[in-house]
Image 1 (cartoon, one colour):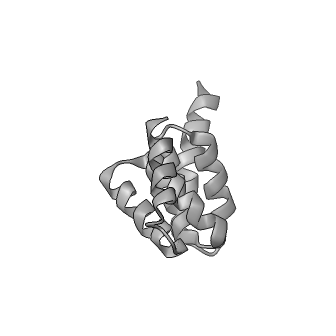
Image 2 (cartoon, rainbow, N blue to C red; image 1 turned 30 degrees about the horizontal axis):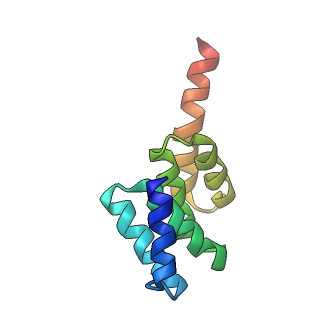
Image 3 (tube, rainbow, N blue to C red; image 1 turned 135 degrees about the vertical axis):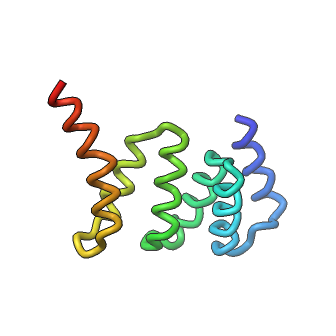
Length: 105
């Protein structure tokens, strides 16, 4: 609740006038460990630039830190590109191994 009010007052003051500022603030909050605020600012940025893969990935990881695995999975799935090996490796490591362990036990 407090974080939501903080974002509301920041937007009212008009300090953030360009979408790129949303991205910079989102990354700064991400690096500081404020993942709730990072998710909020990156979402605002993605409303303007929905195809920015870097912002989408950072928002996904912020959701993972917030223990929102559904958003994390959906975001990674939407970024999934068979030609990018790093994403495939992360996807398989994150989801295949726990699923396999669950099935085997």
